[in-house]
Amino acid sequence: MELIVTVHQMQQYAEQQRCAGRRIAVVPTMGYFHEGHLSLIRRARQLADTVITTLFVNPTQFAPGEDYQRYPRDLERDSQLAERSGCDVLFAPSLDEVYPQGYATTITVHGITEKFEGAFRPGHFQGVATIVAKLFLATKPHVAVFGQKDWQQTLVVRQLVRDLNFAIEIVVAPTVREPDGLAMSSRNVYLSPGERQKATVLYRALQRAHCLVKQGERRRLVLVHAMEAELRQVPELSIDYAAAAEAMTLEEPEEFTAGQTVVLLVAARIGATRLIDNDLVQVPSSEDACA
Ligand code: AMP
Image (cartoon, rainbow, N blue to C red; front, side, top):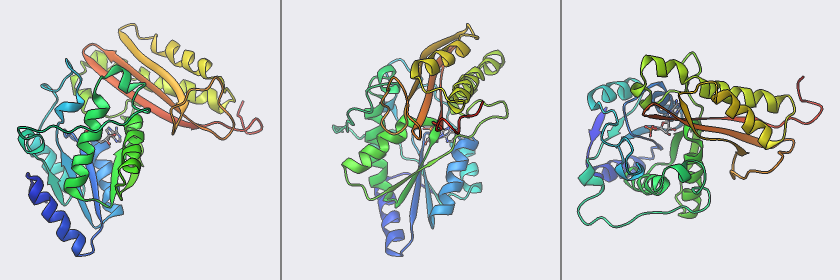
């Protein structure tokens, strides 16, 4: 596996691959790899001839006071894991390489960015949209793989790709979980053993609402209250939001309709760690609802 650290070299490499008729997949990440990241790299391997993983802890997507400084980093370990998962190139530019002195451009995606994560993390999606666009321009991919774990982010990226005419296919891969249901996250290393155990409540909250939908419940607030009630079982948890929305638009109707795909979303803080998770569920027709 090759390590590339400059945008110029990355663009030259990508151009050569394209000229040789090779299909490029990119997996954008902030590193400190776990099975979730590696599953995206393996998926990319199936989709393309050349797999580029980007590793950049992007300061502009952290809101003031968030964990940018202490975000876990380990380039040596990440290189080994990426290579073993089938990555051809690790693109790991420095801060100065991405945002040199005098850098002055940001990208704002309106609408979809304004609720949920956007409301709780000011500037987050502007940082995400800007870095994703820059990484696309550096790596020139045909396809980009993102995790369902950050559902709202996948919608922001889809909007960005549509609006700026990036000729890139967006693939969303399922969330990889620990055996007890906790979604894998680089931030899980912040959790104390006690917090780690309690953090599984996010998954239980999603499961509870998922079952309700499968049983025929369509009222949004019933789903939200069920998730909140589950989350409140852990008093140490501070809820940012529990929500149910139409999966692709994030609209929140009073009632969902048969056939719609609902995204259930939770975000909560436990100690100093903020965790998010989500689940997708299709609303059954009245006849198909299970008892
Ligand atoms: P991050 O390094 O946290 O910015 O994540 C990089 C990519 O990995 C994003 O597309 C995430 O959605 C995805 N990702 C993070 N956690 C998981 C997980 N548990 N399962 C699948 N994908 C994930």
